[in-house]
Length: 105
Image (cartoon, rainbow, N blue to C red; front, side, top):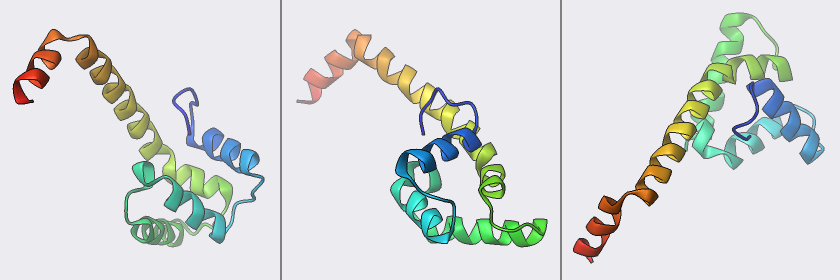
């Protein structure tokens, strides 16, 4: 689920296609466990929240419903990835990082 994809729906659909999978319970468990940086370390908690959301929305578990549930989180995650990437680039080019590394060694 890379940075150049604008929506979670596109990222998820692409992942399903690449892996040759179809959305379903087993696939949800797999994707949640394979990407803890996005879904959190406790995959069961995430899936429980998704199940409650489905009930409140009166929706069935579909690829589209899952994408809608994850969309906001995806945009926040992408923004955080950009910030972290920028921060790492700034750190590598900063003489302060090198100086502090030699002092603590």
